[in-house]
Image (cartoon, rainbow, N blue to C red; front, side):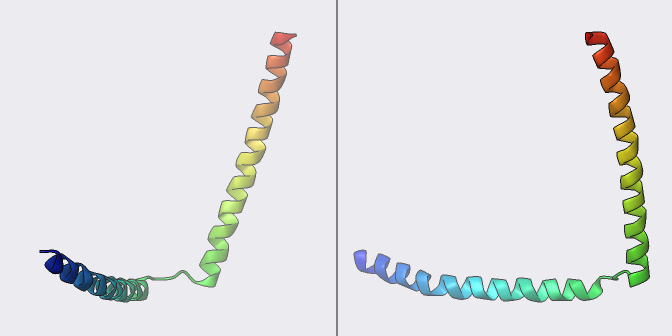
Length: 80
């Protein structure tokens, strides 16, 4: 009975790395296939959307800074 366990365990040790390697190959093949289907934005689109994001972040930063300053003064006035 011990001999059967040893044989089965040894065979599993050899088969597992091969199985994982095949699964990894399959996964990477599917990743490459999916990346080929992606429609990437042009350089002009990327620059445009980046500019919009930066402008919105700056506007919200200024807005939150003003609100913070106003609320800080109110709290300081109330606390004394």
